[in-house]
Image 1: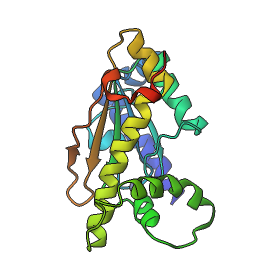
Image 2 (image 1 turned 135 degrees about the vertical axis):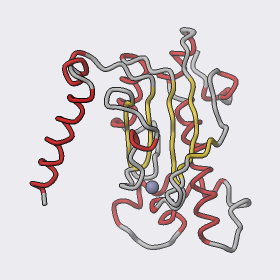
Image 3 (image 1 turned 180 degrees about the horizontal axis):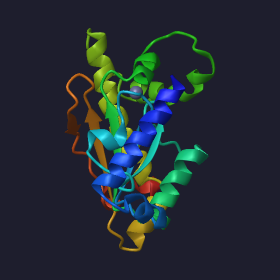
Length: 206
Ligand SMILES: [Zn+2]
């Protein structure tokens, strides 16, 4: 089975090089993506593929339920590198409907270590408890998937990394999207932010 993957890889590399001679040599010299993608680890949401971008065009960070937490050194380091070194112009948080992490957070099972990660989703669920009142479980899960994306867009705007870029007058926008596993379509949640107006005062850095 693993041998198949390596064989696939050889075929893919040959095809790419055939289509665009010098493709890998050019990529090896530098990466200059315009976009940072923050998505879920779910195997059904492959970042580059669903937005039709080639290697080198999308800087990617994925974790369970696409969370951006200020204490997550991994995610914040990716954000820092993308904004300050790669100078991406767009940060896209892309959640997806039917997210297993979100579903688990709405449940009451003891799942062990991951409960500490899901706790952040529970907090969002609690904040919005008055609108997560639908009888249908899928509807509740999907609504929380959307609310989570909105919260993560806010979390990104509240970081110093993003605010520093805005202070410097740099072009940098944060967007919130949601992907449907059922039909492969991404919907824009229209929660874009590209300046300090989107940040409550207490989170603003001088
Ligand atoms: Zn997910």
